[in-house]
Image 1 (cartoon, helix red, strand yellow):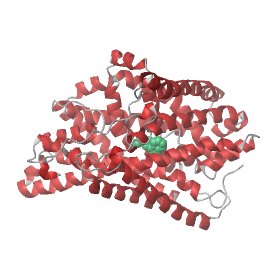
Image 2: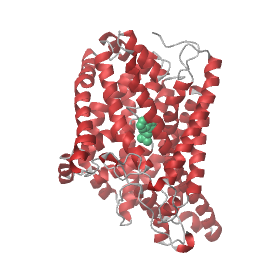
Image 3: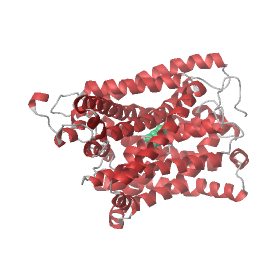
Image 4: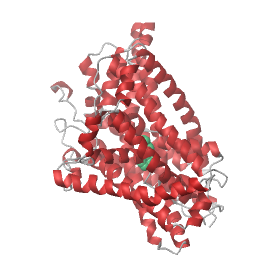
Length: 519
Ligand code: TRP
């Protein structure tokens, strides 16, 4: 069953794989989604629940995905089919890898739109810095961002952007274009080359920004907000299952699980690499970044008496306002959005890689043929992702600005979970709260019940038998029962009973109505 044949690329070493996997895990999920998910769900209480999900469910499922990929080889779909057939089971098991592949692709369509916003903010801040230096000399460098602009104008930045489909689509095009180009260059020449530059830069920026924010701002309030548990908020939302679904959805999203993505990065894993060890590093780094990102964001938000807004408003409305009021705000803001851009790029390449690995064919193809197919596959997938993404971008344009068709289209509106949601919200909700938990559930069942014990023990190669037993218990019992129950209750039963979405996919706030001269 060895997956190594002429055409299959592998990571050039242990560090390369860890950078790639951490790069995939660390992204907008950590910087954009986690801080406000924690804020909305009772701070420390949610953080605790989240960490529990990460350790009991995320870690074992991550190890499972990696070993399935390495043992099966080819693409995620081919790997699962081969493994099922090797143990005398039906090749139809590969259907769940198909679902995962579709989920990854759906995610990249809206992920790159949001990443486009990040790019736009970075650009706006850079232009602003140069104009303020030109106007004010050195003071422009040390002062806050968006000099001379009114508070309302700064807070309205997101509204302005949402009302400009052209800008959104241009930034989305640049981002998905970059992603496609990197993925088309292959595992070593593309993905690995990108992550080994971007990830270290990301970490340096994160550390500098969080230290600066803690010194500058209200560190104690921020720590309290993130870590002091508000049990009443937890209790309230525990009853309808929504907080558990939020925590599990966030855990899967943040670790890039349940979508065949880590199976795909497992394909390129060398035999000498320890899977339990690498999985632990990825989980620790991802969780650490989510928490540290909170410490880079909340101290300055509280410093200026701002409220941590829910949804996209936090990163795209509240933070820019904080940047406008703090010393060195321009530089801080540029560094922050560049950091977010790097994190998003290393994640989106992993998302596009899942379907590209499928397009470039199975292990029996030779290097040349695989390379040719990869370039064509990545180009076609990137183009389709761009087109679908345009629909997402048009769906957030306020109705007062223009009727884009997409802003009044509710594709899954007939299901209670997605009532009233437009394309972007519904795609986000469908993937995060349904497809990823479903994929995680199936991965656990497949790795725990379908693949033979001999295969999983040999491939995972735990340092101790106790470690292996613990993994197997979690994957056979805890993950399926817990994730299955939360999925059925949170996504089906509860929304039907109450007639409203249980796990609120972040509503993209409609922009404030613009004054007539800007319309
Ligand atoms: N984990 C990334 C983040 O936190 C996003 C991501 C990359 C992802 N690959 C994925 C999410 C696969 C789900 C599935 O931003």
